[in-house]
Structures are given as structure tokens and as C-alpha cells.
Amino acid sequence: MIRLKKRKFSIRIQFALIFITMMAAAILICFIFNTLFLGKYYLQKKRGIIKEAYQSIRAAAVSDSYGTDEFKEELEKVCLTYNITICIVDVDSEVRYVSQNGGHQLEAKLFSYIFGYMGENVQVLEQGEDYQLQITGQGHGDYLEMYGRLTSGISFIMQTPLESIRESAWMANRFMEYVGLLVALIGGVVIWFVMDRITKPVMKLSSISEQMVQLNFEAKYDMNRHPHGLVKDEIDVLGDNINRLSETLEKSISELKTANNELKRDIENKEKIDEMRREFLANVSHELKTPIALIQGYAEGLQECVFEDDASRDYYCEVIVDEAVKMNQMVKRLLTLNELEFGNDVISMERFDLVTLLKNYVQSAMIITQPKGIRVDMPDYKPLDVWADEFMTEEVFMNYFTNAVNHCEGEKRIEIRLETEPGRARVLVFNTGQPIPEEALGYLWDKFYKVDKARTREYGGSGVGLSIVKAIQESMHQQYGVENRADGVLFWFTLETVRTELSQQADEEA
Image 1 (cartoon, rainbow, N blue to C red):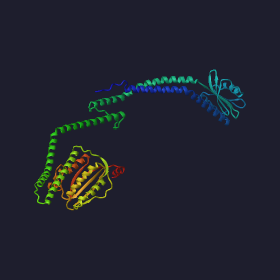
Image 2: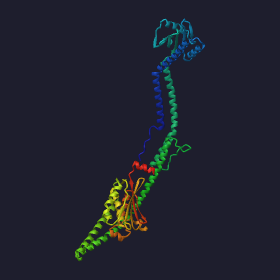
Image 3: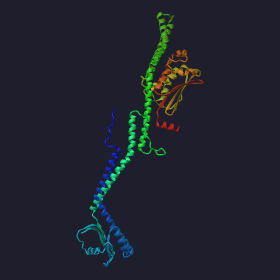
Image 4: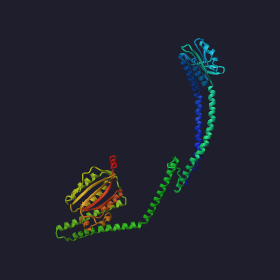
């Protein structure tokens, strides 16, 4: 037996490596984003803060409230929170507000800007209606700066330091490296132990499947369920499926062994089959003995010229021809029955209209029913499609109808009825006359069985017709039967109907 080699990496190692790889990828992505976009994001946030302070100053100038304590407290809060230095002077060049974090140092710079001296290392970022936003370089670093003169005559300058973006990004990246490495290691360890709870049931399932390969179905997966019996996770679902698969395989193997035993028993019954074959040959010989004897006797009479006139000679010839025809029909029926019983005659399942088949046969059979004064009743049914062998189905109906004609008495009436039920059609052939003895009902389908041998002989019956019905119906896996009624006998057989959407809907409504 070929066994699978052990894998180099277990599921636990694979999950741990996947987790660490994903963490490393996440850290690398953060590193790239920090390097490319952190400086721009930082500068954008600083510009937003400067503009918020500018809007506060402008609103205070419009309302002439920049000299109030409330305005000063608001600006001090902004300066302390966002590290902004502010200096404001009025139209008379008097300082109206300076922030406590170095606002006096900006006073001279504001006046130099007012008088047009900008200095060096200035990078203008934005030019507004009454302000200018720029970056200035000083000996101890860069600053984001805004100055301007409002329409009310108020001049202002605001400044906030710009730390080294590159240095901040580098420090953030180094910090993320350390934190990411630590998280990856801790996560890998956690994954290692957590995966142990997952891999154990997987290994258990692997062991169970290996035992199933050895046809040992006793091992079962111990389901780990909630108190209410709900399946917890996918592994429990897999375990439940493997348990059911094990039960199904065990049942199938048991059925296979049973079938094997039956096959052995069938082989042991070969002698019985041979006996049945000999019995069949004996029955055939018995059935052929009478017509052969008649043919021989009348042929010898013709040979010896025992007849007295031409009419007698014609009678002798008619008997010989009639018995020969009966023998030919019986042999054909026996061949058909033999083909069906041994499975040599292939059943061709096809779709056809059952009602049309019945109507056509009844119409063609009028040549034998009308001379005998037999009335055939069949309602005008709607077309009904069935799945069956059309030729074999006509053979079954022909045998029933022929029996009905040969045994029709009393009112001399034959009724053809069609009943439907979900997925199945039932054809009924009833004829008035004497009922069949109850003790004979069980033997009607046996080969060469005749209830009234004298009458069967009278119309040329061979006792094979109903055996052919049995063989055909069983080859198509359909039912058949016979019932005694108060005024006659009813034969029936079933066929599978074609399922359409309308028929399915009708069946569901029924």
C-alpha cells in the first residue's frame, strides 16, 4: 500500500509563517507610507492649525473684540495647544497681543514685513487676500509662518516650528520596526499554541480516514458541540461528514457483502436453474405435442386419401394450416419471452403519447370485436406523454385486449380506462364475463398456465401472453396486476409519465 510522505511543514508552522509574513508586509507598507507621505501630512496639519488661528483673529477684528480677555484666553489656548507664537499690532503700531511663548520676538519681524523687508530663506506656500503663508528658515530650524494686514488695519504674524520631518519619519519607522518585530514574535508564539487546538482534531480526522482506508469504521470523530447541539466550527462539520461517510461506507460494504453472499447462493442454485430449464423444455414439448400430432394425423389422412370428397380434403388442409399457424405464433412468443427473461431484448425508453397508442390499437382491433358483437368503450382522453418502450407497451396492451376479447361474455363490453397519479399513468382493461377463480389468480403470470385449457385451446391460446406482460413490465420497472369484479375481470399496468412544469404544479396543488 502506498502511503503519503510526511510533509516538511506542518499546518502550525505554515500558519505561524503566514502570520509573521503578513506582519512584516504590514510594517513594510507603513514604512513606505511614512517615508513618502508623513512629511506632507504633517505640513498639511500645521497649515490647517495656522489657518484656524487666522480665522479667529479675523473674526475678532471684525467684531472689534481682540482686546477683550475672552479673545486673549482663546488665543493663549490655541498657542499652548498647537505650539503657535502670535503677535498682533493695531493700526497705530501698538502691540495689542503677544503670546507668552515668545510673541515679543516676532514684533520686529512683523514690522520688517510691513515695511517690505522679507529676508532670505523664504518659501511662499499660499498668497491670500490679506495674508501670506510661507516657510522661513532660521538658524535653529524651519518655521511655518503667516503674516498679514486685515482691512481693519490690524497686522498680525503667527509662527509654528516645523520639526525635521525626515527625522520624525525615521524615528517612527524605527519604532514600528521594534514594535512590529515584538508583535510578530508574540503573535507567532500565540498562533503556535492556538493552532495546536486546530491541528489536533485535524490529525484525529487524518487518523480516522487512515483507518477507513483499512476498512475499519469503528473509529468516530468526537463531536465538540455547544450545549444545544449546534456545530461549533468547520472542523466539526468535517468531522460530522466523515462520521456519516464512515457509516455510509460501512453500510455499503455490508450491502456489498450481502450481495456477494447472494451471488454465491445463486451459483449454488445452478442446479435449480437447470431444473427450471428442463421444466421449460418439457412444457414446450407438451404444448407442441398436440399441434404436431394433429398436423401429422391430418397429413397422413391426406396422404392415404381417407377423405370422401373435396370438402373433406379442404377441411384437412385447413386444420393443418391452422395448427401450423398456432405453432408459429407460440414459438414466436416463446422466443420473445426468452429474450425478455434473459435480458437480451434491449428496452428502448422513449417519449410518446399513450392515448394515441391506445386509440390506434382499439381502432385497428375493430375488425375482431365487431364480428363478435363486442362494444369497446374508451373515453376521449387528452394526450398524455409517457416514458416507455412504445413497441413493448403495445405488446402489453395487445395481450390484455386479446384476453378481454377471448373471454368477453354477458353484455359483451370491454372498457379501456386511463388513470393518472403523480409521475405515473395506470391503464385498465375490463371485460364482462366470468371472474377468474381466486386460487388461479396467483398463477396467471406463469408460463403455459391456463385456467380453462379447453377454452384456451378453442381460441388458440398458448398460456404465454401474460408471462410476456410480466417480463416486459418488470424490465421497465413498472407494475401490473389483475382484479376480479362482480361482472367481469380487470387487468391493469402502469407507466412513468413525463414530468412537466404544469404537471408538477398540478401534483403539488393536489
